Image (cartoon, rainbow, N blue to C red; front, side, top):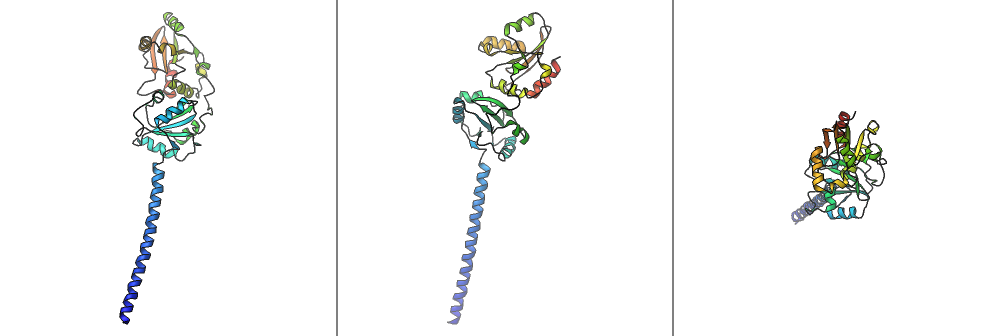
Length: 278
């Protein structure tokens, strides 16, 4: 009888130890699951607020001010960019658009954004793109962009390109060519989002030495005449706007243009201007 009691007590002790161990294991597993869930949330949570193409188009239609981050999870530079953006505070003003998840049904508003690369950061003020950052941007560049304040002006936004480049209409351009003059023109359009972004970026540089030496040709009206626009691009060896063209004695000798493949940036323009403006 005594042995039976001892065995029963031993068995009870073993069961008790097993239950305690099981409880501890369950708590540990629960903690691990919680940590994994938190990690999963942090990993999959994209910057600030995600947005669809339709929601984006509606915000543009309403002329709202906000910033946009366009990315693709399979893009290595995007992974690096996302990592940096997650550490910054944009005051709820930065929206993210995952192209891989975006609907294939593009809207006119989205097409006008002309997204050619990922990652791309856009600063949109009252429905208009005023800053475009294509490719990876480090923390210093991000701070300069002030994406958390889309309505706040940055250096270069207070000026207009016509403050530096002298306006020239198409008729006057034709006369200059016929008179075999030497000059440089900037071809742009006020309604071109790429031009607006490019000009704001260009104006952050010191353009004093080009004041009065570059002529601004607004081709907004010309672009509406398809055949004339095609011929103008061919004559000047440009693919679109913004672009620069140099003439020597009435003949085109060089051009630097926006392209569908590469877009256009201030660095490329400044390099070209340094070589062609005397």
